[in-house]
Length: 632
Image (cartoon, rainbow, N blue to C red):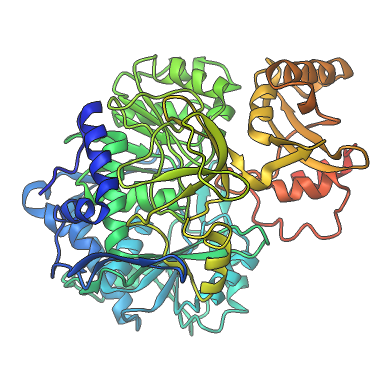
């Protein structure tokens, strides 16, 4: 059996080489570290022309036995989850592996009592309380397929996801705390369910204790249902290729895509990547600040850490409540060793006084991580100097909902990190750069279209109910490659830097200009917090560049500043990359996970605002109206 954890640069190089020379043998050995009810007959079978990928064929398992049962004897009393509430005055919850196992089994019996059977789809629309983790694991325990919808989405977005998956049961709450606000989850869910005939039962958690409407034909209380069951629930035997969950991600067309992840391969890869990227060791406290509603929450709050026997922190609140020191207060309070967050959060915190950081003891931190988008250099250095005190490696992880796990990243204290670079592929991941004709670029130092040329275990198997779209989006652009839609450059040492979506490349006067490098240049200006670049039609150049720029102080906007920003772009990239229009804005249209919706910005820049699509799922829908009103 091969060790799960890499321990040196030489070890990484040796393991990586083995993993690409014989991927089946490599993953076969890694998978033997897990508990299987029946061993697989074949490690891998795939045909990307269909496309179809299968790992650990005919292997039988249940992922919750790997996350819970196998730890009970040696780690039963160890904390599995530390739940930190929105309000710092409320007591944190420490849930041991024994307690988590018991609570998962109890709630699994609640689901069964309410008619849930293997293969049913269960929609989870809940706040970041410990019960959402229990709900996810309870579904997996009995072979139900969970579909978590982020608790900030609108009733329209919720209904679309319920109907697409034909969910049978909804798990929700009366409301959710988020900073100083209460989200009326039950009210939003009630509105959604008016158009969701597949839902037979709504199980409601009491969290905020606010007044809610009640449908006695549909609604039952979570706590009352728990009173009816015991805590004994054998794990359902699942095939390695049975569906574990559906998770919706934004599509370029505006219609969400239900990415399907399966039991065996996902478990193996999420766990392997967690242990190696963060170099988690026994007794560490690990904190990923994401929401369970995103793939980051699935893979790196729940499944990866729990299958590793780790202690994982769940946070109900936001980084700015009750003030901008909350992240660092939690790090001190729980003696956090590995901290994983988004560049958006880092940039937001960096604009505030360092007194919010310096008030807390961050000496327990060993590893810092970023996720969701490439981190710009200024934010990287702020994070490194002020949070890591120049002692913590920063793992800048590139991956997607579709990939299930981290694909390109440094491994903490094993491989070198490099500002703005995701750096090296994880074992088993074979990235290549393609030119516009789809041919591999053989030179080490190069820039091109990023693609992956061999399957890995946690690849999403399909888009729920639409395999044709799955093929068209990910496997049609370049035959026999997985196409993630991103461009990248590779330095002379083989490190990868993600340059942005390929559709974020703007062709200006015949020059291909990636938006990310221009944004990085703008963001280096002392007065700038963040920026977003899009192209808009130009009679002479074909396309021109339009910049949306957020300043630390909106009063600093001026014509002189416009000139300074363009001079900076000219200096860093070249005169061809200068922006024709620069609009100073108070915010950008972002999804709840921090992704900038460039599709909307492109339409505004082109003065095509007749059909912006559903903006209700944005973090701040009102910002769209403000940008339109002040458009150049």
